[in-house]
Image: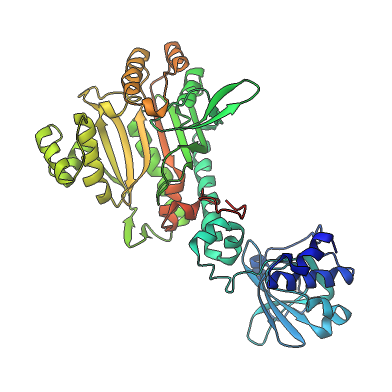
Length: 495
């Protein structure tokens, strides 16, 4: 036993941990490595159960996982073992284990073990691996007492701080986060099948650009220069269009130094897609196809329960203009600023020194967005709100932009991309006048890139975290992020 372990037993750990350390010591004294090593030819638990055939006494199995239930009934110990596929019962018999039986008595909840032996059924019909005399292998001793009920790690804050416990204590959490990976994989598969090239663009940037948000700042020592964690990959992906990559996408992190909420985490995952010679209508079709594919693969039906609301994903999805929805839900015409400001006052929106278009958008956010439950494409935003977007030829007051709303949340944002360098430069100048607090500056190199010629294009961004929330019924973004940002707890070294 190490000096640290001796110190813990003598008083450096709580009572339950000291008891576990004593069993760890007993394992070492018996010549058993409590932290194991390479353990090969392991079969997933669910696969073992699926191949089991009644009446065949020659079936063998070898599994590894964590003990989530242990029932010691004297000369028999029944264990529920959980691996990443599911659970299987392990049977330990004094008769079968022989001289290794004392080792079985050192097992505890939370231990990670390997089990090898004959497959059979118990009298209650449970498929069970009956461990052979040399079939029990210790792989990692658990020194912390697990939650009393492995399905009952109920303290929400503790679950997020100790996701490594949450994952094996709450199977539904594991399933949701496995589905997250599968959803991203399905999106990648669909895009690559359409000829899109997956790329990676810089996470640290010299200019905080591509969106209006407050960035995180870091410093590169060797170059002695400040850098920004990116708030958007947009301007770099558009540079690739200039370079001749006609269909590109990226699934990666964005960082915004802003608030936390049920729908917001400062570090979040976005899918961004750009397609040359397309427009926002093409991006609308693509969005519906990608999200619809995920519904087909990962939801039981097109009717998806999300909290206390039911979302109808049946296609085609509704497409309505920004002005139409403002009229429908706020009751005012977008061109009647007197009516819009009256509505803003009724909604208790502070309007002092606020431009008309900003007031309109504040009213839209307050009166319209929460009503958009089933998938709704909101089209044709007021042009001043969209500095990177091409204007509608039929009415330049509006931009060829849409946002997709589901369950009152924005899940996607897309444009017909602006590719006129002179107009883009002027839009940047207008945008920067009101963004001093975001530290935004003019990206002159992007303007230079546009001067070489960027093809007409459609661009799309989908919030992966929010999409997974909706598809898996998660009530908060923290439930679909493996390690969400949390306030530090003083003194314990935990995030």
